[in-house]
Amino acid sequence: MPPSPSSAGAGAASASPSASASASDPTPSWWESVSQARSRIQALSSILPPPASQDVAALADSDRPARALLRSPAAYAALSDAVRAGGGADDPACHWLYDTLLSADPDLRLAALAFLPLLAALYLRRLPPELPSSLSGFEAVLLAVYSSEAKNRQGKPVLVQVADLSVPSLYHTPASSPSPSSKSPRRPQPPPIPPPQATPVVGVLSPPLEPQAAVKSTKRAGIIGVAFEAYYSKILQMPAASKVDACNAVAAWAGQYCKCRFELDDKELEEEEGDSLGSVSPMSSEAENGKELEEELAGMRINGDTSGRNCHEDYDKEARVPLPWELLQPVMRVLGHCLLAPLNPVEVRDAAASAVRVVYARACHDLVPQAILAARSLIELDKSARKAAKAAAAAASGTIVAAGTAGSTASSSRPSSKPNTPSKQRKPDTLLVSK
Image 1 (cartoon, rainbow, N blue to C red):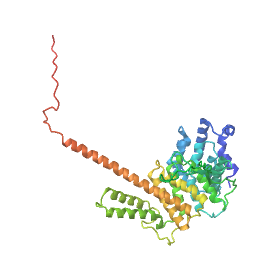
Image 2: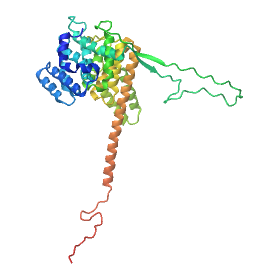
Image 3: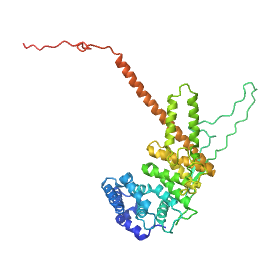
């Protein structure tokens, strides 16, 4: 259930002067956005402990306080600790997130949406709740994101149109029918029959959203999946810490930390070892790149031992949750961005690489074909990207070494000259003679 009107109204009281303006125009002006952002930052600093509250309060003095709040690692870490310690109906951190998600400022909503992966992970981990109201704060935030997404879609589904390969496009020309042999006698051919009109193949990514007043057990996965779809639509602006939390949450939900998650990596390493043994020079550059790739893949096995656990071993599965496709589909898109986006830092890509391998193992054990196909494709793309990066780094280092060697060779081949002998002919001195 959402927070009480009294507590929610207290957080929105400071923004009451701009309520009439925001009612007519949903996008506030620059000064209204700055005022709302400073008000929300001051409210956030009041619920944080003293060391972090001062750092967060200093963000209100910037030119774009909402954007500064979104990009502040200290503010994210402090509010994350507050969210981990709360979750109930009277939790001030959940109240702040709920009120901020209802703000008219897009940057403020992004600052609150960045905590969705952490909040969803904590919520699913603590189910079933000890008390009925112990998780109502988390549920209020999830419902706020769901309601906002349902309002934006206006009761329409999210569709995707699959290209028809029989129709020519900018990127391909369909194969023509084989021409008859030249030896066969020509016969009058009837006029060609035009092909039927291509019917577009439309797939439904997300069905129309129904209004939800509470998070029921039968609707829980769908509500969280829609919340992750809203998160994915703004993922380019999310901080790196939020993306790492999203990858760690997906890995914990899958929870299949057995050796099956390294199945595709082991096949790749076996092929590379066979190629290096069959080559003439075992310490070639390709073998060295394969060894570095093996060390890098082994370093990503942070959730288990190096050799992997036995599939029948009873390891810790307390964070595992059911993963229906309505939840797994938006989550896999988030993993795909974290894994393949070129501007993501290394820690985000490594966390996504570890998470997608755990999802692959879980899908193989549960026999979910869509999840197996999606996870396997992401793993293959990850390995290709790491190979390309290693090859580019090796080529760049080889170019630098070759340039240095050529420079040293050129300098050593120059003829030596005596120190008193100039290399160029001096111009005659010009003497100034006074008349």
